[in-house]
Length: 310
Image (cartoon, rainbow, N blue to C red; front, side, top):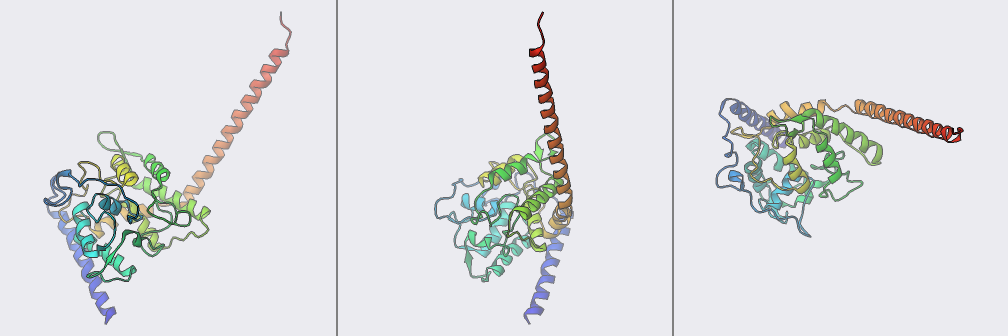
């Protein structure tokens, strides 16, 4: 009976998500400044006060959820959050679709083996390694093998990611692109596989990785300035609102078909290894040339000093 229920549930869910995606195609987008619903935190770009985490607060590997806790949208201590509240608050904060916001906390309830309708969770509990949202080769966290506390921000890694942005908006401001995320993901997967003796990244978590980083392009529009704030400070920028303006928000269908799939398909670890090898060989060649020039200059100087003067 549970199998039959699951089949009907999944069919109903994906039908719902698809219908929202289609409705988004024909209905007008929300006006700028009106993406966050009136009466909810963030309406008009006015977010609740930012208060950094305190000792004993629960945080996780997801900067977007941590930012909600830091602003008091979720409980500031990150504890005893109901799955239903998570559903509602993610929707109003980031404009994910109702179907997306139903899927994520239901998935969390399942891997935590809790009741979606009755139970609660702490943010750090979402980081069950390779079971929940946490995985190796993240773009903003060191692997759990090296850093078991996955709430720790990988500052240098994030700065390197943002510095790799190759796009520009109409005003010349830097933007991350699909190609940027694919290339940096390839780098992270190669580096992790070479350095982490416990490295594991199955297909499901590869897709999670591409999904997680794809929110940088959708919800945050790839804008490096905004991403610096959300990723490095886990704070929502002043006057910020979701870059998704569709009336029913970001659906799973649209997200996967227009962004996640292309990020994942663009990840080419062999190409990254070849490019890295070529760069290392070029650097070694340049170093050898510089040493040869320095030796030649030194020898010339010696000859000049030894030559008779008039």
